[in-house]
Amino acid sequence: MQDLRTFLAELEAKSPEQIWRIRDEIGGDYDVAAVLWELERRGDMPVVWCERVRGARFPLVTNLFADRRRYAAALGVPVDALAEEWLTRGERRIPPRLVARGPVKDVVLTGADVDLARLPIIRHFTEDAGPYITNGIVVAKDPESGVRNASFHRMQWKGRNRLGTSLHSRRHLWDYARRAEERGEPLPVSVVIGAHPLFHFGAGLWKGPIDADEYDAAGGFFGEPLEIVSGVTVPVEAPAHAEIVLEGRILPGVREPEGPFAEFTGYASERSTRHVLEVTAILHRQDALYQDIAAGISAEHTTLLAVPQEARMLRVLRANFPTVKAVSFPQSGTCRLHCYISMKVTAEGQAKNAALAAFGDDLALKLVVVVDDDVDVTRDADVLWAVATRMQADRDLTVIPNAMGAILDPSTRDGTTAKVVIDATRPLSGFARRHTLPSDALSRAAALISARSSR
Image (cartoon, rainbow, N blue to C red; front, side, top):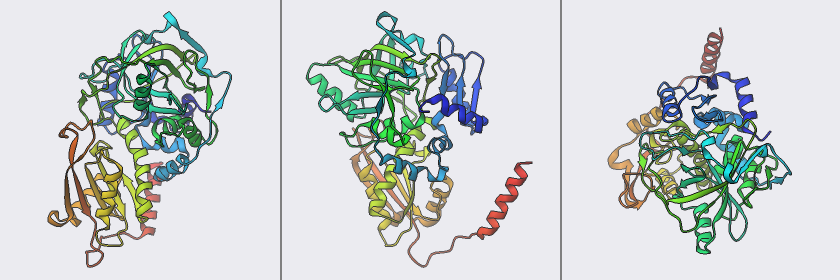
């Protein structure tokens, strides 16, 4: 099934410890975010299912994407095969299938019945300008070609049928809205809130060229056509098995204050394009789940940034450096500003060239650390050990000044930043050997520990 609830039911059946249900009523503003913050501080990142949110009609599910095991479960692979599987599915395109009816149309509200207060839209942090929809995947069509784009955008709840949003990525949706506005027309959209993870992966996170239909990409991740239904008040189709869909239009020539909002950097961002979305219909399943994404520098928000970018960077680097083993965007670098690359170096200077290729592909990066293929780039401690024992600053550290940086990085100077390369790889010969253990001894140890843990 292509729905969120089936995925959650299967997850709870196989790994009940990964879903943490709160059956008592919980306050929306701050309380949900505070629970997630405290769980993460303790090293625990389950899906949090709030069955009763004060003042709302629907339960709230959040933190689904905080743990890579759940990405792997959705894709049906081990965690260490996540990037490779992501790349394989991302190359497939399967057009969607229009169906006459789907569960998302169990309840259709239009006109005076449209009221966003029905939803448990919550305020996450003190600095936020108000309650925010953090898991809104905005689907729109190119005003000329009709190709569908889907992308995440934060949405501030402003009234019964009004949302403020920022298209600060300046990507496809911003371009669609710009072109529609030049013609004096609103841009029709559908906002998907709650869907199977594979829909998020293919439609919301996989980035293709501007002429690629992202419903086709979602089908590629599912391995079958995405089932969609026609819009009720807009000419934009929606996933038939979504939990909630908001139909509406981005208004031309209208700008209103939006933000600040707690972003992945750990800071409240004041930046916004100040667009306004007027909601014309609310579609939802009879017993809908409202899916939130933990905002700020949370494991969920940052991991959602890291996983697709790691797969993309792996593809880019291997095209020129086939010996690249793995790529990691660590949470310690907000999963956007730092990148670790492990590779088997076959020529002097190769590590620096790989780092420069990474900077060329991703303008947000500020620091790239390149290590040998015996270093686990998923562990900060292992990477820092390589920096400590294989790097000399006067020889292996390179600073590139005044380059283009991430617009949400508060340390940039008018959008420019310095970039740093750390080459923490060994010379090709004459370097000390790392101590190791025989593989059969490690296998015996793993079996012994597993047997002891299962008693």
